[in-house]
Length: 413
Image (cartoon, rainbow, N blue to C red; front, side, top):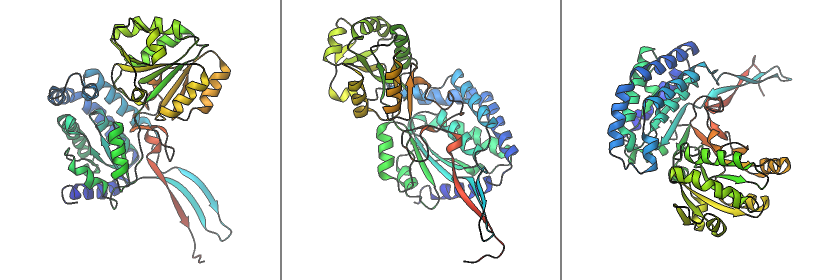
């Protein structure tokens, strides 16, 4: 650990100072950061254009890399929202007095130093920095080389605002984008308390398998929508199209559509012109392929297509005989991110909501709502698909752990 050890140690030391920073000072800094993001829009866009020009326009990651005026405005709005949220640390969780007079208190406290490893999305740099600052955590940000110029421009703004508010600028650090630095971060068990990966399934698996620092996974999404036999066809069409085309490059976009055999002929015929408008490529099983005959972008699905996170205008379609087959399919292929049922059958909806094992389960709504901002949590670090500590949108409230405070008067055991 020679390349970035000094950066990690500086952040570790600065995180201690951050924990003593007055809450009002942090809130003020976040509001100023939001203003600085908007006033620095041209600088951010110029840096982002350099990164985008190096990418393949047809690569799904390019959309995740791209910033525009609206996306930057949204980033600033998200930071302002975070500034209004209560500090999750310092909450009294439990208080009791023991028989021997000891006073016990359990409170929430920051993790300490959070490491984030992520791909493409430069908005994540602002999101995680703001969330960690609000929760009084130091953070080490390891973005990808694709977003290197944008991330540097973002970090220059963040550092300037920290200095202007007398907050130690080393509490937020952008690590070099070279891949080699990741292994050093993984080994920094003395200084880093948790690592959170955000990106593709390959990235998440790599972090989980190689990090010595504890990992909280924010998982890839292989998301399903099950159109049950008693679904409203118009409602189902609207939801499915939204879930696929509104922003296909994100993890909460639908990847596989399961259609009950009794409603499939009607539903798929009406879906064809809607998907054709957006040139959605469909990988269909045998039965769906027959019903979709004549569709311009139709392909026969392989088994692997039903476990793919497409992150583009592509999806798999399968006809199932009933809810039992739909549930079995989801259990086999789900990454436990977001799953949905479209149906007017309350009994089957209730069964789906109770039986499906995922971070977020929907009834008659698009999977695209799985998002910290949409849930009223402010920005998020990612969608956690694991079950320990945090599940679903991993936002401000989960960036803490617990500490016992024991107050005595000379007691011994």
